Amino acid sequence: MGAISPVASRRRIVPGDLREPLVTAHECHPTSHSAPARMGRGSLPLVGTRKLPDAAELEAARSRTIPDVLPGPDDPAPRVLFCGINPGLVSAATGHHFARPGNRFWPVLHESGFTPRLLRPDEQGELGRWGLGITNMAPRATARADELSSEEIVEGGRRLRELVARLAPAWLAVVGIGAYRTAFARVKAAVGEQDDRLGETGIWVLPNPSGLNAHWSREAMTTEFASLRART
Image: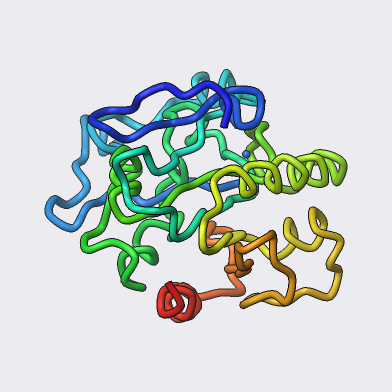
């Protein structure tokens, strides 16, 4: 799966050719189940223990890639590999998936039963203990997912197929119907379980949890995530 570098404790993040610092707008909620989000001076919210990146840091993060978060050798067999569209600028600046405040990925992941508590983005390395991982369809960070070209998404789909073949998760969960339709050439695909499979891996398309996605409420997203959870 390319070069493997250890994460904190025994988790691992995989860079390498396939998923080198990888892509949007996928970013997340800064609070945890046990501790509310803290506010720094000037009421600037924190992501984990860090302040959110400022405008200059966000601009500098454009086109960066971030490593995948994948189960390690001591973790359970991969159950679900979540695939976002591409990193947003907050994610690229911090190295944490779904890191932008307002993104609903982490709250919905917990509320649907995938994690026993609400994780912060900087706790993403804990996912491996539950057989979960995160990757992206395209590696390049952008402010909005619509800044990606169709060619980037199609190429990302090819890399994703290779990653799934190597990791062999029970399910690939693509978080974003538009990216799935483009990458897999399934223009009529809808959210939910797909007829296609990648070897033994089932495919489930989930709604994009970005705060910009007004078509899905957090409750409706949780229901859809929970439907996948019930199959794992």
